[in-house]
Amino acid sequence: MTVRKQRLLKRHRQRKRLFMLAALLALVLLGALVAWWLVPLVLALGWVAHEAWFADHLFYRPQDDYRHAFPADVPALPARLERGRLLLDGDIGAAETLILEVHVTAGPLGWLFDPQVWIGDDRQDFERGVDGLRYLNLSGQQEALRAGGLRVRGRFCKLAGSATLHALVNPDYAGRRLLIVAPHADDAELAAFGLYSRSPEVAIVTLTQGEIEAGRYRRFGLDPAAAARLKGRLRCWDSLAVPLWGGVPQSRCVQLGYYCLQLPAMAAEPRRSFGSRESGESDIRSARRHNPLPLPGDVDGAPTWSNLVADLRALLEHFRPEVVVTPHPELDPHADHVAASHALLEAAAGSAWRPGTLLLYANHLHDNDRWPMGPAEGGIALPPAIESLPADGLWSPCLDAEARLDKAVALTMQHDLQTPLPAKKRLRRLIQRFLAGRRWPRTGDDEFFRKAVRRHELFWVRPCTAGEPAMHAHGPEQTGDQPLHAL
Image 1: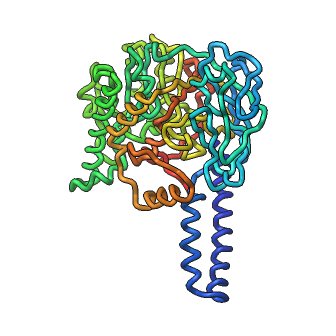
Image 2 (image 1 turned 90 degrees about the horizontal axis):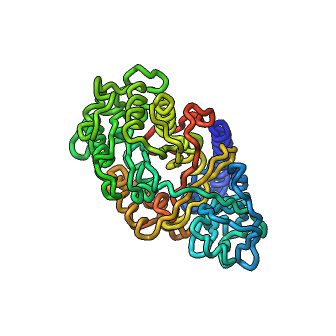
Image 3 (image 1 turned 30 degrees about the vertical axis):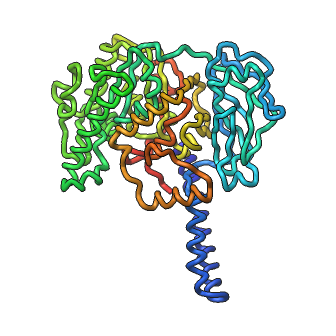
């Protein structure tokens, strides 16, 4: 994925330079041959068009097919669209996670507005100019589908007449003993608030303080190191306090206190300490004062990979989870997220207790900074997968309106999701609202309020086989606590 992304980025930059050169020559000729005052007008209109239609970061072509693989035992039922209704040749049985593989083609207006697929009253959006295989999430639509009354229609796009429905059967993992691995405060809420708020026996472990990029806290008159320490304290508090909104008591929340974006370096040199990049701290015990149990890293407070793995091993043996929820190492490229799942597997390899199942989530993507696309409250279609992924199972539980509101409120409590939008982003959203028809929720300005508060949560299901080669991931590409974009 990384090689392809860099190739597409290089090609994009080359095309951008050629376009800028051609535009500059055109503007010079326009000013010389027609009227000088047209030059600033054309520049302003060009900038508005860029913000409305060309500001998305896609590291693939919208005409590329998505390539999702499913386990061999997952039924693939032939389906067809007739007069706006989806008809099946076969029975979905007890399947609760339903994924429709279908070719989606943008219409003429689908280059200006986001192509939408309406599934009953649900809406799932795709890239402008889409023309390839996509995967709609029909989970929660079983009754209408069985009755032959599920309406599926495209707006600004058309769907092929034939399709394939992948019908996956899972237990309700909310009823199992769960451990959620969150690299940073808010990762558990973004990925799995709906899941953990239904679970009677869940524990949440947050690996890092999330203290970097604390510039806005300097408004309190703090120097950079003091601002980072304050941000770290606040996010540690978030990791312990916010889960209570979802019914998880502080006695089942653990903060390990390692430092943000240092996990990959720790993995490379397991016995070396890696303190904070910004706060000046190098003793993780300052973040652990409210933990409900002692851990191996408490002995010396050293931020080392060896301590991290020992801490996770102790937590596996203490909470004895049947299922662990952790980042997807092939889909989620955030450096700390990849390292978190590697640390978990290394801990499981030497643990007296090994969970049976991993539920993998992706809060960030290699390829598309808008996925899930479309407005909040809609469903979650499968993400871009231009290169093949492991053939994992899928589980996509549904969230009702009350659960979605609770999830949105949980996100409002996270300090890192309350950063005010820069003026340029506010202006971009205003332009996209009026010219491209996009909408953002009232619950918060951060993109995660749009991306995470959905009708579905989405997890890839994988057996917990420690050291399995499929867990090897592509190199990290971010340098911040949120994904940074190269374009």
